[in-house]
View 1 (cartoon, rainbow, N blue to C red):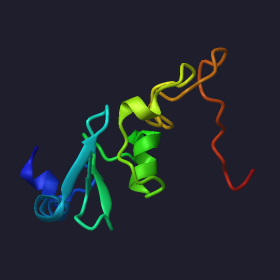
View 2: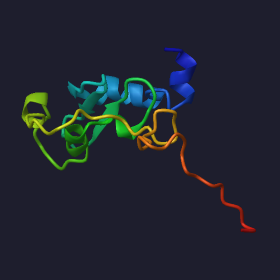
View 3: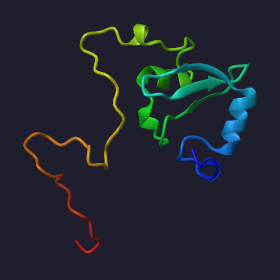
Length: 118
């Protein structure tokens, strides 16, 4: 990755400050199926994620979301959380992109631009 992207942009994975914090204080706890890597400090008072690619919070699967927000203490493993036949695999939110969900009968989004006069 380009060194200047790391220093000056937070939307391209991590900033330089996060890199240093992860290097010196971070303890790697796991990685999800999308390649996002999860860390905590030694006291477990802070938890963070280094995204694989562009930063988008909807890329975090539900079990890791629960861990990073301290709703659960146990570190997620795929065998514990994805064990029901009705569960679908997690997908990021594609709203606003070409991959956004549209019903089968609809060819384009039903959206009218708002104007203050109308």
